[in-house]
Amino acid sequence: MVERFGIPKSELLTNMCQALMVQGYALRSEWDWCRRTGRGDIWCAIGKYHSPTAKYQEIYIRKVWGAYQSILSRGVF
Image (cartoon, rainbow, N blue to C red; front, top):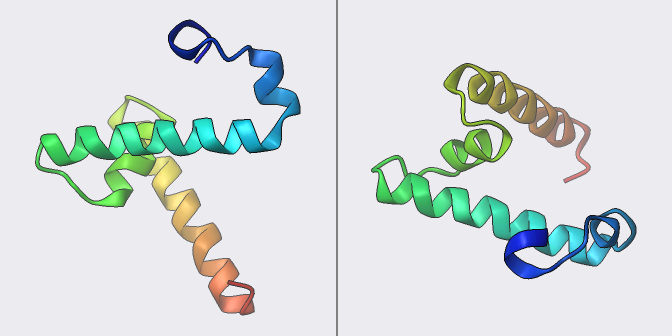
């Protein structure tokens, strides 16, 4: 983000609003890539957001899914 948009790393560490917008942008960019390649579900984007490597994408997706299920089971979400 520093090179492309001029957002300093320190800003991402101290400005939560800016950090969330950048994370949203990054996830959306990955989702766009997934849709262009015919893998348009959000889980493709979540995995790709974490890693370009399929092995690590799968591990991360399982962790995110588990955390999501835990939130649902507690009735928090």
